[in-house]
Length: 421
Image (cartoon, rainbow, N blue to C red):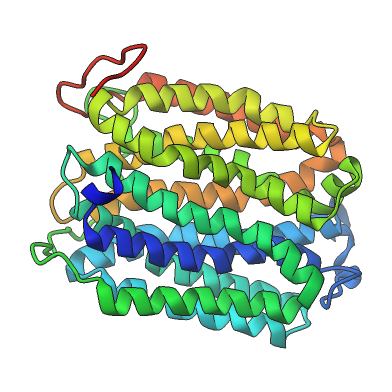
């Protein structure tokens, strides 16, 4: 089985990320409820028409303010990742970056219970973004360095599966905890998740001895490719931004979706987590298959499925149809995630895993930061609008990947109708 073929340190890193993801994903459901008329953080004084020099720029709504909070995490996380990834390359160490980031995530999570000012909530979410920027590139670089070309897809599939179990399980439980025990208990779960992750990494994970600081002084990212218009890793980064936007359009719209579908927070948490549940089911088999049949077929197929799966959410009229749409979107993301990281790992030069892989993790973080803001603004033009824009972005990602990313696996096997061992 794939799990038994996986390095013990990869499994521990996966378990640590699962524990942390449970706590962090709680906040995606809890923070929108925490902000607004029925929460502890009032935002009425910040709503209205935003004008600069007498010119009306946009209407500031509660949904847009929630989007700002959710996006603060993603923007700082994304923009700092190339720098933290390069720093871990230069240091030749990953573990210290992972632990520092987990500590910051935990402290910020516990601090939400102590604040009632909207501006302080933004500050805490930004601090969590910094913590994630320290943790994520170092973690995926270590997973990559513990793999070979023949096991890289499997390693990333296993790692992402456990991480996404936590991320998908968290929102489902968050609705229950929030309803039964309140905000303090929900924030407490986030702290416990970060603490458990810290303990696992501290005692059971070590750096790869061969890792050396071989990164140069240049922090620039290759944009132009040798054989195509774009560098393949940069092209995947652009496509990953689009994918991140499509799957994060949903979070900001919690009150609107609940009213539209006639449901409560528990069903919303289930719908949110369905994308991740689909990832849990398909990440390992797809990652393992990409080690045998190649990365490109799954990348193209995943982005092709992402288009209708995203658009369908805008037309869902019942919780059941929303769950089906979200599940198909999750299958699409599963087909893209592990193979994308495997491509970047295949192309990364020795000692630069943190820098190269941070392009994709940065892209995903940037997409998940833009998505909530975009949906909070676009929904004023109709419920379908955010999802229609997301479908267009998915189509653009498909074009970029199909035209700019070539196969990196040497001598992949042909895909048969019924693959055999």
